[in-house]
Image (cartoon, rainbow, N blue to C red):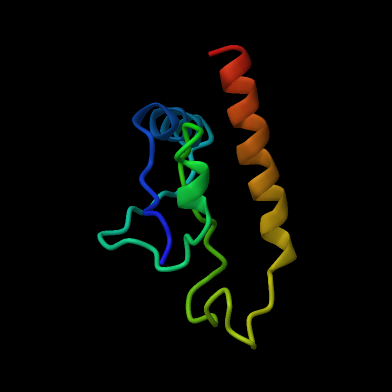
Length: 91
């Protein structure tokens, strides 16, 4: 049992604008993630927005013993976070 993770509207707006500027492919899910565990606790104190990077289709789930993190998505994650920081500093 853990607190629900709910995206803060302002944080979601920032992420959405950044991803639009990046012309990123975005998919929205209709059901909640089961593995957002402690992120709900962060959102009690901060404006948070939970998102995931796609690692490809037909891959084992994140916590599966056969999951192999695709290192090539690290640069995408870095670009998103740097772009968020840049947006917040100069919208």
